[in-house]
Figure 1 (spheres, helix red, strand yellow):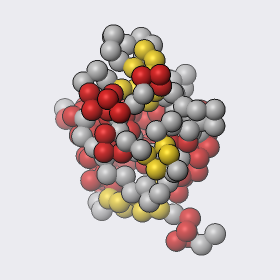
Figure 2: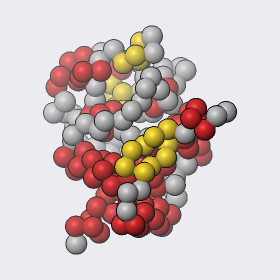
Figure 3: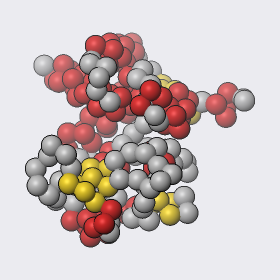
Figure 4: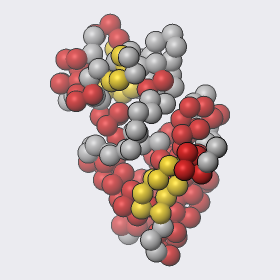
Length: 180
């Protein structure tokens, strides 16, 4: 496989980190260059939908939603079909893309490349393969230092947590550390 086919441009690390931290704290969309990849949509993931996502909830058949374990009333999760695919993925495309859940809007598999966390052990081989291909640009020594700090934080987190949970916690902890 040629390097151009193997690696994916993840963009400048500092810009990506800031965008993801803002998205996670404020619920903004993340601009992920998926280019047709549907690994996250086909990897047996439960999708959390909050009660305030009324436009989303109006577009998902109620039969596909279940109460979210451990969360207040009104929080729901949407499961996946027998193939591990999101039921809203139709012919390889999200059928509710403009009104997709916040979880989908903020999901960014580059977080695994940035934190060094592999989702293969969580049974997500497609996401794992995709995340191994991302390559960030480091525009300064500070960028590289932030990247190294993020990976150090991720390594220190409880391995009993899911890979996604560990990656998001690492992003949040680095943001907190940078703010102080």
